[in-house]
Length: 333
Image 1 (cartoon, rainbow, N blue to C red):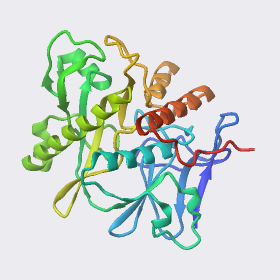
Image 2: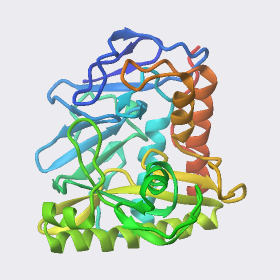
Image 3: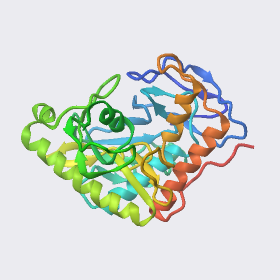
């Protein structure tokens, strides 16, 4: 049987290799009237590999990916979960896999079609799980940027470069770049990913694969970002991951989600400042002004930050897809 930890008594565990030693069994949320959150799953016959957000079960030649409601920032998994966040990540990725129409790892998001053990409570996994092809993960994070923000803005201020590439002088925070650019990073097992040059990426994965990663990443981004703009959302930047299956590069993991991307309101966009966002920048901003030093256990998120973050994620999903989120969590009695 699957066992799921829910809010009220969150059965959180240490999620190595990330900084999660501050989370212990029996940790409780402080959010009043908070909707149910799923922070951890278990399957008696398989031990999952746990990432910052996803629980991954190995079925041999395929994988079960379960998106929890955990949220991370600055390489820490925060002690407070965001209701329905995992469902947003899962369902918006499924939307993009279908719309982008590129080779990818998705087999199904229908739990009725997944080979789960007899007696598994499939309703608990509905909306937040996908069954996928298993492939060899390419050890490069494929970052694509159309606007100057985040760590890119920090780098530009210091050296007038972006991902090691020379940029024009005089750019402001949130300015649109002269062209969409590919700025890869390493895929770290622990700690921070490291921004690297294209040449270094080619040394890691080979010239041919590096060029294909760049070409595919830019094409996928342009297609997705152009569509999003018709819905009033600017995708400022994003991160893609790819895997090799039978010698072919395929798109894997999550795609153009509020976790992996910066979503801005086109209506309120104004260069020269930070932007109104529909992603987890809201949480990052709160943490930065909270006084947290990023080295000690992170603080609990206040009720209003949790609820507003949930609203931003759900709003982004509904604007982009035109659909209502499937299986939103009811408030506990």
